[in-house]
Length: 222
Ligand SMILES: C[S@@+](CC[C@H](N)C(=O)[O-])C[C@H]1O[C@@H](n2cnc3c(N)ncnc32)[C@H](O)[C@@H]1O
Image (tube, rainbow, N blue to C red; front, side, top):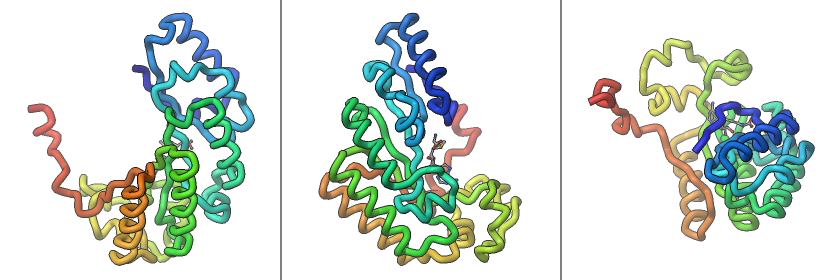
């Protein structure tokens, strides 16, 4: 299986389709490919119409927010309406079983009301399209948002990352999500649990408190 780490593999449709044509010439359908795609590329670049389904093992599509105000704030260049148009194309060309969507909750401005809007969109996708939706809490990393963090009352420094387990650390989580409480996390998880019990194709794993999952690098090589 081949994995392309290019997180905008579909940005240039012609190039992406040519890569597939060349791979097909070399390997036929014996090699499967993992790619990352964007909703807007699916809509404008005729990607799914021109790459063979049999060559795609999986395709990750970053959506992030389930409501237009959030998509605008993160400058994703996408609307919820466009997302649903792309889902229709995915279904039409049977890529719905060969892709998963990725969402983020807990942006610094997000209240539970906004988070629930993203969960509403995920619920609708799971029910109507049965496409896997991967849900993550935001990990605030150096980025444009990082430089605006003080505006959202987030006071952390880069030395936070000296702790190798920063991503699972509760202090890091609650400092970087000042509007979110433990009770909110539990509410979100209850809603995800209910979706999953009804067969919803939503994937979620809580990171905070999972510090015991960490394996020392020395242990990895043993
Ligand atoms: C490697 S990114 C690729 C995104 C996709 N190729 C695109 O361009 O839209 C994969 C997914 O990881 C998640 N992700 C990336 N950065 C994240 C962060 N700092 N915190 C939480 N999730 C993140 C997002 O849902 C994102 O769509």
